[in-house]
Image (cartoon, rainbow, N blue to C red; front, top):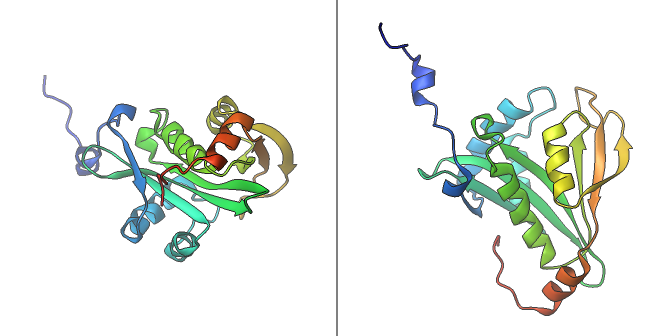
Length: 189
């Protein structure tokens, strides 16, 4: 019996990435083309971000963007957070998390979220995000990390008209206070 033949596209696909082989590092301008390609793949009906949006996000001083890379250095995910408020009233807002579909359910999204939360934890305060109401895997991941649904935004995503939940993770008091008093090195700067 002859082995099944792969198409050229299948042969070039990366194998399943394991969480243990992924490293998280700051995103750079050089990563933008890959981010745009992933956006097109992940969010085709919801106005995927273009290169100009990523450039703007990376240039904003209050934002931190990170990339997840496999053992070969290929970006398999990205995430960004805005660090808002002031020292007395800090808060953060997760802007985006995107993971290559070949890596879904492999822990990459969790690694990205945990890195964002660690960055937010340095300042303390609550963390907010929006998530599609039909994205049950993401909602479950956020809930596991202490987020709760606090609102519904009808027709939030365009042009699809999909609804979004607003979720909030309250400040983790002890952690938030400890981070404010410590001189921790920034992981994502």
